[in-house]
Length: 163
Image 1 (tube, rainbow, N blue to C red):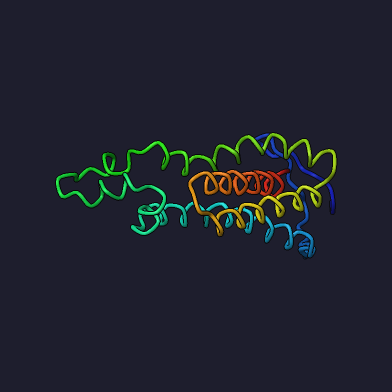
Image 2 (spheres, rainbow, N blue to C red):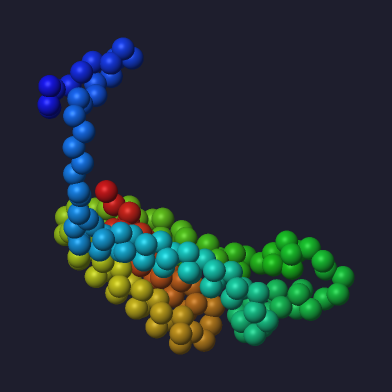
């Protein structure tokens, strides 16, 4: 009866013999898992950095002086009141909004040109965003850099999480 399936009373099929197969994990699977982990790391690392950045007094004083003044006031205890600023909200949400919108374009790009080209585009967007954010002198450059970083996140996230 080796290799014959038997019907169980519960309605399932079970093999009559047990043979153990040693499965090896191919290197491409390991590489794919590493790439997916890096894609998630890039997004989560950015969330942590931008959250810490928006509480730094020097950063707030340079780009969001109204928020900085409210933080220095003694009578305001609510963080909602301290950080209620449209420019700061635009700074925070610009990356996520551009990442969301770029993901739709990235799926088309991945289908048409492949993952390598899409990852190359993500890298280009990341580099543009980093250059703008590192050399920023005003809020407009800061927002543009965040939008470019969001495009990079959108492309990279779509490629690494595509089935």
